[in-house]
Image 1 (cartoon, rainbow, N blue to C red):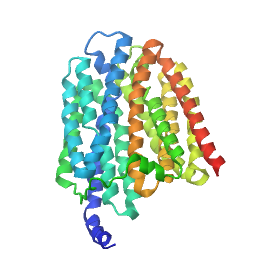
Image 2 (cartoon, rainbow, N blue to C red):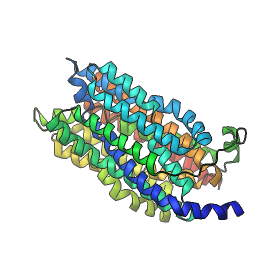
Image 3 (cartoon, rainbow, N blue to C red):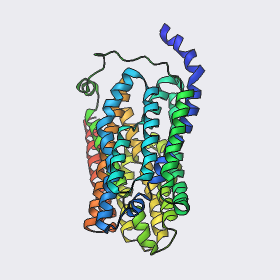
Image 4 (cartoon, rainbow, N blue to C red):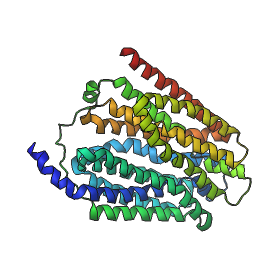
Amino acid sequence: MDSNTQKTPKENNYWKKNLIVLWFSTFMTGIGFSMITPFMPLYINTMGNFTKSQLVIWNGIAFSSTFLVMAIISPIWGKIADRRGRKLMLIRAALGMAIVIFLQAFVTAPWQLVVLRLLQGVFSGFVSNANTLIASTAPRSESGKALGTLNTGVISGTLLGPLVGGVIAQYLGYRIPFMITGSLLFIAFILVVIFIKEDFKPIPKGQEASTSEIFHKLKNPNIILAMFVTTMIIQTSNNSINPIISLYVKQLMKGSDKVTLIAGVVAALPGIANIIAAPRFGALGDKIGTGKILIGGLIFAVLVYIPQAFVNNIWQLAILRFLVGVSDACLVPQVQTLLAKNTDAENTGRIFGYNQSFQSVGNVCGPLLGSYISSALSYSAVFLTTSGLALVNFVWVFTHLHRKKAKK
Protein backbone atom coordinates (compact mmCIF):
# COMPACT_ATOMS: atom_id res chain seq x y z
CA MET A 1 0.00 0.00 0.00
CA ASP A 2 2.79 2.37 0.91
CA SER A 3 4.60 1.68 -2.35
CA ASN A 4 1.50 2.61 -4.33
CA THR A 5 1.15 5.82 -2.38
CA GLN A 6 4.73 6.74 -3.12
CA LYS A 7 4.37 5.88 -6.79
CA THR A 8 1.44 8.17 -7.57
CA PRO A 9 3.28 11.54 -7.28
CA LYS A 10 6.02 10.26 -9.57
CA GLU A 11 3.46 9.15 -12.13
CA ASN A 12 1.74 12.53 -11.98
CA ASN A 13 5.07 14.24 -12.68
CA TYR A 14 5.91 12.50 -15.94
CA TRP A 15 3.22 10.22 -17.40
CA LYS A 16 1.43 13.07 -19.21
CA LYS A 17 4.69 14.21 -20.79
CA ASN A 18 5.35 10.61 -21.81
CA LEU A 19 1.92 10.51 -23.44
CA ILE A 20 2.49 13.71 -25.43
CA VAL A 21 5.92 12.61 -26.63
CA LEU A 22 4.76 9.11 -27.55
CA TRP A 23 1.64 10.43 -29.29
CA PHE A 24 3.82 12.45 -31.67
CA SER A 25 6.26 9.56 -31.99
CA THR A 26 3.58 6.99 -32.86
CA PHE A 27 1.95 9.53 -35.18
CA MET A 28 5.22 9.85 -37.09
CA THR A 29 5.68 6.09 -37.03
CA GLY A 30 2.18 5.58 -38.45
CA ILE A 31 2.82 8.09 -41.23
CA GLY A 32 6.16 6.53 -42.06
CA PHE A 33 5.01 2.93 -42.32
CA SER A 34 1.80 3.63 -44.23
CA MET A 35 3.54 6.16 -46.49
CA ILE A 36 5.41 3.41 -48.34
CA THR A 37 2.64 0.79 -48.42
CA PRO A 38 0.58 1.87 -51.47
CA PHE A 39 3.43 1.98 -53.98
CA MET A 40 5.67 -0.88 -52.81
CA PRO A 41 4.93 -3.02 -55.93
CA LEU A 42 5.45 0.02 -58.16
CA TYR A 43 8.81 0.63 -56.46
CA ILE A 44 9.83 -3.00 -56.99
CA ASN A 45 8.80 -2.71 -60.65
CA THR A 46 11.45 0.00 -61.17
CA MET A 47 14.21 -2.48 -60.26
CA GLY A 48 13.85 -4.71 -63.30
CA ASN A 49 11.69 -6.01 -66.11
CA PHE A 50 9.27 -8.27 -64.24
CA THR A 51 6.26 -10.23 -65.39
CA LYS A 52 2.99 -9.70 -63.52
CA SER A 53 3.52 -12.99 -61.67
CA GLN A 54 7.09 -12.14 -60.65
CA LEU A 55 6.08 -8.67 -59.49
CA VAL A 56 3.27 -9.78 -57.18
CA ILE A 57 5.39 -12.60 -55.75
CA TRP A 58 8.32 -10.29 -54.95
CA ASN A 59 5.90 -7.79 -53.44
CA GLY A 60 4.23 -10.46 -51.33
CA ILE A 61 7.60 -11.64 -50.02
CA ALA A 62 8.66 -8.07 -49.24
CA PHE A 63 5.42 -7.40 -47.35
CA SER A 64 5.45 -10.66 -45.42
CA SER A 65 9.12 -10.82 -44.48
CA THR A 66 8.88 -8.07 -41.86
CA PHE A 67 5.92 -9.68 -40.10
CA LEU A 68 7.43 -13.16 -40.26
CA VAL A 69 10.42 -11.96 -38.26
CA MET A 70 8.11 -10.00 -35.92
CA ALA A 71 6.15 -13.16 -35.10
CA ILE A 72 9.37 -14.92 -34.13
CA ILE A 73 11.28 -12.12 -32.41
CA SER A 74 8.48 -10.34 -30.49
CA PRO A 75 8.40 -12.78 -27.53
CA ILE A 76 12.18 -12.42 -27.16
CA TRP A 77 12.00 -8.61 -27.09
CA GLY A 78 9.09 -8.91 -24.64
CA LYS A 79 11.20 -10.85 -22.16
CA ILE A 80 14.04 -8.35 -22.52
CA ALA A 81 11.59 -5.47 -21.97
CA ASP A 82 10.40 -7.08 -18.72
CA ARG A 83 13.98 -7.25 -17.50
CA ARG A 84 15.51 -4.05 -18.93
CA GLY A 85 12.59 -1.64 -19.42
CA ARG A 86 10.28 -0.34 -22.18
CA LYS A 87 12.22 2.87 -22.80
CA LEU A 88 15.23 0.83 -23.91
CA MET A 89 12.97 -1.11 -26.30
CA LEU A 90 11.58 2.15 -27.72
CA ILE A 91 15.11 3.42 -28.33
CA ARG A 92 16.12 0.14 -29.94
CA ALA A 93 13.05 0.05 -32.22
CA ALA A 94 13.16 3.71 -33.30
CA LEU A 95 16.88 3.84 -34.09
CA GLY A 96 17.04 0.42 -35.71
CA MET A 97 14.04 1.01 -37.98
CA ALA A 98 15.22 4.54 -38.83
CA ILE A 99 18.47 3.16 -40.24
CA VAL A 100 16.99 0.12 -41.97
CA ILE A 101 14.10 1.97 -43.65
CA PHE A 102 16.35 4.83 -44.75
CA LEU A 103 18.62 2.27 -46.47
CA GLN A 104 15.61 0.88 -48.38
CA ALA A 105 15.72 4.03 -50.51
CA PHE A 106 18.99 2.85 -52.06
CA VAL A 107 18.25 -0.76 -53.02
CA THR A 108 18.74 -1.79 -56.64
CA ALA A 109 17.22 -5.28 -56.58
CA PRO A 110 14.15 -6.86 -54.92
CA TRP A 111 16.24 -9.29 -52.85
CA GLN A 112 18.03 -6.34 -51.24
CA LEU A 113 14.68 -4.85 -50.26
CA VAL A 114 13.58 -8.20 -48.78
CA VAL A 115 16.77 -8.44 -46.69
CA LEU A 116 16.18 -4.96 -45.28
CA ARG A 117 12.53 -5.74 -44.64
CA LEU A 118 13.65 -8.79 -42.65
CA LEU A 119 15.93 -6.55 -40.58
CA GLN A 120 13.02 -4.14 -40.14
CA GLY A 121 11.13 -6.97 -38.45
CA VAL A 122 14.04 -7.52 -36.07
CA PHE A 123 13.88 -3.88 -34.91
CA SER A 124 10.08 -3.64 -34.81
CA GLY A 125 7.87 -3.07 -31.78
CA PHE A 126 7.81 0.69 -31.26
CA VAL A 127 4.02 1.10 -31.04
CA SER A 128 3.49 -1.97 -28.82
CA ASN A 129 6.18 -0.84 -26.39
CA ALA A 130 4.72 2.69 -26.39
CA ASN A 131 1.38 1.22 -25.31
CA THR A 132 3.04 -0.87 -22.62
CA LEU A 133 5.00 2.07 -21.24
CA ILE A 134 1.92 4.30 -21.02
CA ALA A 135 -0.08 1.49 -19.41
CA SER A 136 2.63 1.06 -16.78
CA THR A 137 3.20 4.76 -15.99
CA ALA A 138 -0.29 6.31 -16.19
CA PRO A 139 -2.48 6.12 -13.05
CA ARG A 140 -4.96 3.25 -13.13
CA SER A 141 -7.87 5.69 -13.05
CA GLU A 142 -6.71 7.33 -16.29
CA SER A 143 -4.98 4.47 -18.11
CA GLY A 144 -7.93 3.77 -20.43
CA LYS A 145 -8.15 7.38 -21.55
CA ALA A 146 -4.37 7.56 -21.95
CA LEU A 147 -4.18 4.44 -24.10
CA GLY A 148 -7.15 5.60 -26.17
CA THR A 149 -5.43 8.93 -26.78
CA LEU A 150 -2.18 7.22 -27.73
CA ASN A 151 -4.04 4.98 -30.17
CA THR A 152 -5.34 8.01 -32.06
CA GLY A 153 -1.73 8.96 -32.81
CA VAL A 154 -0.85 5.85 -34.78
CA ILE A 155 -4.30 5.70 -36.42
CA SER A 156 -4.07 9.33 -37.54
CA GLY A 157 -0.56 8.76 -38.86
CA THR A 158 -1.60 5.57 -40.67
CA LEU A 159 -4.52 7.45 -42.20
CA LEU A 160 -2.42 10.38 -43.38
CA GLY A 161 0.55 8.29 -44.55
CA PRO A 162 -0.86 6.88 -47.82
CA LEU A 163 -1.98 10.35 -48.90
CA VAL A 164 1.40 11.94 -48.10
CA GLY A 165 3.32 9.03 -49.58
CA GLY A 166 1.22 9.05 -52.72
CA VAL A 167 1.82 12.76 -53.34
CA ILE A 168 5.57 12.52 -52.63
CA ALA A 169 6.05 9.41 -54.76
CA GLN A 170 4.01 10.93 -57.58
CA TYR A 171 6.09 14.09 -57.83
CA LEU A 172 9.46 13.25 -56.24
CA GLY A 173 9.86 9.53 -56.90
CA TYR A 174 9.53 6.30 -54.95
CA ARG A 175 12.80 6.54 -53.02
CA ILE A 176 12.11 9.82 -51.20
CA PRO A 177 9.35 8.44 -48.89
CA PHE A 178 11.80 5.86 -47.51
CA MET A 179 14.24 8.64 -46.65
CA ILE A 180 11.48 10.69 -45.03
CA THR A 181 10.24 7.68 -43.04
CA GLY A 182 13.74 6.96 -41.76
CA SER A 183 14.13 10.61 -40.78
CA LEU A 184 10.80 10.65 -38.92
CA LEU A 185 11.79 7.56 -36.95
CA PHE A 186 15.13 9.13 -36.10
CA ILE A 187 13.26 12.13 -34.71
CA ALA A 188 11.14 9.71 -32.64
CA PHE A 189 14.38 8.15 -31.37
CA ILE A 190 15.68 11.57 -30.23
CA LEU A 191 12.38 12.43 -28.54
CA VAL A 192 12.36 9.17 -26.61
CA VAL A 193 15.99 9.52 -25.48
CA ILE A 194 15.53 13.10 -24.26
CA PHE A 195 11.99 13.26 -22.91
CA ILE A 196 10.70 9.79 -21.97
CA LYS A 197 11.01 8.84 -18.31
CA GLU A 198 10.34 5.38 -16.91
CA ASP A 199 10.33 4.33 -13.26
CA PHE A 200 11.09 0.73 -14.19
CA LYS A 201 11.00 -2.18 -11.78
CA PRO A 202 12.09 -5.42 -13.48
CA ILE A 203 10.31 -8.72 -12.91
CA PRO A 204 12.75 -11.06 -11.16
CA LYS A 205 13.70 -14.25 -12.96
CA GLY A 206 11.53 -17.18 -11.99
CA GLN A 207 8.53 -15.10 -10.94
CA GLU A 208 6.82 -14.82 -14.35
CA ALA A 209 3.80 -17.09 -14.77
CA SER A 210 4.14 -19.71 -17.49
CA THR A 211 1.79 -19.85 -20.47
CA SER A 212 0.08 -22.99 -19.13
CA GLU A 213 -0.44 -21.34 -15.72
CA ILE A 214 -2.05 -18.28 -17.30
CA PHE A 215 -4.45 -20.31 -19.43
CA HIS A 216 -5.29 -22.56 -16.49
CA LYS A 217 -6.55 -19.50 -14.60
CA LEU A 218 -8.77 -18.24 -17.43
CA LYS A 219 -12.54 -18.58 -17.04
CA ASN A 220 -13.14 -19.00 -20.79
CA PRO A 221 -9.90 -20.23 -22.40
CA ASN A 222 -11.76 -21.41 -25.50
CA ILE A 223 -13.01 -17.88 -26.16
CA ILE A 224 -9.47 -16.53 -25.81
CA LEU A 225 -8.10 -19.08 -28.27
CA ALA A 226 -11.00 -18.39 -30.63
CA MET A 227 -10.17 -14.68 -30.58
CA PHE A 228 -6.50 -15.42 -31.30
CA VAL A 229 -7.48 -17.33 -34.43
CA THR A 230 -10.01 -14.64 -35.34
CA THR A 231 -7.29 -12.00 -35.14
CA MET A 232 -5.08 -14.08 -37.44
CA ILE A 233 -7.84 -14.51 -40.03
CA ILE A 234 -8.80 -10.81 -39.90
CA GLN A 235 -5.19 -9.78 -40.54
CA THR A 236 -4.81 -12.38 -43.28
CA SER A 237 -7.94 -11.06 -44.98
CA ASN A 238 -7.00 -7.38 -44.76
CA ASN A 239 -3.39 -7.89 -45.80
CA SER A 240 -4.17 -10.16 -48.74
CA ILE A 241 -5.29 -6.99 -50.54
CA ASN A 242 -2.18 -4.90 -49.80
CA PRO A 243 0.16 -6.42 -52.41
CA ILE A 244 -2.26 -5.82 -55.28
CA ILE A 245 -4.22 -2.66 -54.42
CA SER A 246 -1.97 -0.23 -56.33
CA LEU A 247 -1.73 -2.67 -59.26
CA TYR A 248 -5.51 -3.05 -59.27
CA VAL A 249 -5.88 0.74 -59.26
CA LYS A 250 -3.44 0.92 -62.18
CA GLN A 251 -5.50 -1.64 -64.09
CA LEU A 252 -8.73 0.28 -63.47
CA MET A 253 -7.21 3.66 -64.43
CA LYS A 254 -5.85 2.32 -67.74
CA GLY A 255 -2.60 4.22 -68.18
CA SER A 256 -3.32 7.34 -66.12
CA ASP A 257 -0.28 9.22 -64.81
CA LYS A 258 -1.98 9.71 -61.41
CA VAL A 259 -1.91 6.06 -60.34
CA THR A 260 0.39 6.53 -57.35
CA LEU A 261 -1.63 9.45 -55.97
CA ILE A 262 -5.00 7.72 -56.41
CA ALA A 263 -3.63 4.46 -54.96
CA GLY A 264 -2.64 6.43 -51.85
CA VAL A 265 -6.15 7.89 -51.55
CA VAL A 266 -7.81 4.50 -52.00
CA ALA A 267 -5.47 2.93 -49.43
CA ALA A 268 -6.40 5.65 -46.91
CA LEU A 269 -10.18 5.28 -47.21
CA PRO A 270 -10.58 2.25 -44.88
CA GLY A 271 -8.67 4.18 -42.21
CA ILE A 272 -11.00 7.17 -42.53
CA ALA A 273 -14.05 4.96 -42.12
CA ASN A 274 -12.46 3.11 -39.21
CA ILE A 275 -11.77 6.30 -37.23
CA ILE A 276 -15.36 7.47 -37.77
CA ALA A 277 -17.10 4.17 -37.05
CA ALA A 278 -14.98 2.38 -34.41
CA PRO A 279 -15.98 4.50 -31.37
CA ARG A 280 -19.66 4.25 -32.33
CA PHE A 281 -19.59 0.48 -32.75
CA GLY A 282 -17.67 0.17 -29.49
CA ALA A 283 -20.39 2.08 -27.64
CA LEU A 284 -23.09 0.05 -29.38
CA GLY A 285 -21.32 -3.17 -28.38
CA ASP A 286 -21.41 -2.11 -24.74
CA LYS A 287 -25.20 -1.83 -25.05
CA ILE A 288 -26.18 -4.86 -27.15
CA GLY A 289 -23.14 -7.13 -26.79
CA THR A 290 -19.62 -7.07 -28.21
CA GLY A 291 -20.05 -10.50 -29.82
CA LYS A 292 -23.05 -9.30 -31.84
CA ILE A 293 -21.04 -6.41 -33.30
CA LEU A 294 -18.19 -8.77 -34.21
CA ILE A 295 -20.53 -11.22 -35.93
CA GLY A 296 -22.30 -8.39 -37.78
CA GLY A 297 -18.95 -7.00 -38.94
CA LEU A 298 -17.90 -10.38 -40.33
CA ILE A 299 -21.17 -10.76 -42.24
CA PHE A 300 -20.74 -7.26 -43.67
CA ALA A 301 -17.14 -8.08 -44.65
CA VAL A 302 -18.30 -11.15 -46.57
CA LEU A 303 -20.71 -8.99 -48.53
CA VAL A 304 -18.50 -5.95 -49.13
CA TYR A 305 -15.47 -7.82 -50.52
CA ILE A 306 -17.40 -9.64 -53.29
CA PRO A 307 -18.35 -6.59 -55.44
CA GLN A 308 -14.76 -5.31 -55.32
CA ALA A 309 -13.89 -8.14 -57.69
CA PHE A 310 -16.28 -6.77 -60.33
CA VAL A 311 -15.80 -2.97 -60.23
CA ASN A 312 -15.44 -1.11 -63.53
CA ASN A 313 -13.96 2.18 -62.34
CA ILE A 314 -11.93 3.64 -59.51
CA TRP A 315 -14.89 5.37 -57.84
CA GLN A 316 -16.72 2.09 -57.30
CA LEU A 317 -13.57 0.63 -55.71
CA ALA A 318 -13.12 3.74 -53.53
CA ILE A 319 -16.67 3.50 -52.12
CA LEU A 320 -16.28 -0.19 -51.39
CA ARG A 321 -12.88 0.30 -49.73
CA PHE A 322 -14.52 2.90 -47.46
CA LEU A 323 -17.12 0.28 -46.52
CA VAL A 324 -14.30 -2.16 -45.76
CA GLY A 325 -13.17 0.34 -43.12
CA VAL A 326 -16.67 0.21 -41.61
CA SER A 327 -16.47 -3.58 -41.35
CA ASP A 328 -12.96 -3.33 -39.85
CA ALA A 329 -14.35 -1.05 -37.14
CA CYS A 330 -16.53 -3.97 -36.04
CA LEU A 331 -13.69 -6.48 -35.94
CA VAL A 332 -10.32 -5.83 -34.26
CA PRO A 333 -11.65 -3.48 -31.50
CA GLN A 334 -14.35 -6.00 -30.62
CA VAL A 335 -11.83 -8.85 -30.49
CA GLN A 336 -9.68 -6.83 -28.10
CA THR A 337 -12.73 -6.04 -25.96
CA LEU A 338 -13.67 -9.74 -25.75
CA LEU A 339 -10.09 -10.60 -24.78
CA ALA A 340 -10.14 -7.96 -22.02
CA LYS A 341 -13.54 -9.08 -20.72
CA ASN A 342 -12.45 -12.71 -20.51
CA THR A 343 -9.00 -12.13 -18.97
CA ASP A 344 -7.95 -11.34 -15.41
CA ALA A 345 -6.32 -7.93 -15.03
CA GLU A 346 -2.92 -9.33 -14.03
CA ASN A 347 -2.73 -11.43 -17.20
CA THR A 348 -4.07 -8.94 -19.74
CA GLY A 349 -0.64 -7.86 -20.96
CA ARG A 350 0.50 -11.41 -21.64
CA ILE A 351 -2.76 -12.34 -23.37
CA PHE A 352 -2.55 -9.28 -25.62
CA GLY A 353 1.05 -10.19 -26.33
CA TYR A 354 0.04 -13.64 -27.54
CA ASN A 355 -2.69 -12.03 -29.63
CA GLN A 356 0.00 -9.83 -31.23
CA SER A 357 1.84 -12.98 -32.30
CA PHE A 358 -1.27 -14.31 -34.05
CA GLN A 359 -1.69 -10.90 -35.67
CA SER A 360 1.85 -11.10 -37.02
CA VAL A 361 1.17 -14.56 -38.46
CA GLY A 362 -1.84 -13.09 -40.27
CA ASN A 363 0.33 -10.24 -41.53
CA VAL A 364 2.67 -12.86 -43.00
CA CYS A 365 0.01 -15.09 -44.54
CA GLY A 366 -2.10 -12.27 -46.03
CA PRO A 367 0.39 -10.79 -48.52
CA LEU A 368 1.63 -14.25 -49.52
CA LEU A 369 -1.93 -15.42 -50.14
CA GLY A 370 -2.83 -12.29 -52.10
CA SER A 371 0.33 -12.52 -54.18
CA TYR A 372 -0.18 -16.19 -54.99
CA ILE A 373 -3.88 -15.87 -55.88
CA SER A 374 -3.33 -12.80 -58.07
CA SER A 375 -0.39 -14.39 -59.92
CA ALA A 376 -2.15 -17.74 -60.41
CA LEU A 377 -5.60 -16.32 -61.20
CA SER A 378 -6.33 -12.58 -61.18
CA TYR A 379 -6.63 -9.51 -59.00
CA SER A 380 -10.38 -10.04 -58.76
CA ALA A 381 -9.87 -13.53 -57.37
CA VAL A 382 -8.08 -12.03 -54.34
CA PHE A 383 -11.22 -10.18 -53.27
CA LEU A 384 -13.36 -13.30 -53.68
CA THR A 385 -10.87 -15.33 -51.63
CA THR A 386 -10.89 -12.66 -48.92
CA SER A 387 -14.67 -12.82 -48.80
CA GLY A 388 -14.38 -16.57 -48.32
CA LEU A 389 -11.97 -16.07 -45.42
CA ALA A 390 -14.42 -13.67 -43.78
CA LEU A 391 -17.13 -16.34 -44.14
CA VAL A 392 -14.90 -18.95 -42.48
CA ASN A 393 -14.18 -16.47 -39.71
CA PHE A 394 -17.89 -15.79 -39.21
CA VAL A 395 -18.62 -19.51 -38.79
CA TRP A 396 -15.69 -19.86 -36.38
CA VAL A 397 -16.73 -16.92 -34.19
CA PHE A 398 -20.44 -17.74 -34.24
CA THR A 399 -19.75 -21.34 -33.22
CA HIS A 400 -17.54 -20.44 -30.27
CA LEU A 401 -19.72 -17.61 -28.97
CA HIS A 402 -22.78 -19.85 -29.29
CA ARG A 403 -21.00 -22.55 -27.24
CA LYS A 404 -20.31 -19.99 -24.52
CA LYS A 405 -23.98 -19.05 -24.34
CA ALA A 406 -25.03 -22.71 -24.32
CA LYS A 407 -22.79 -23.39 -21.30
CA LYS A 408 -24.44 -20.54 -19.42
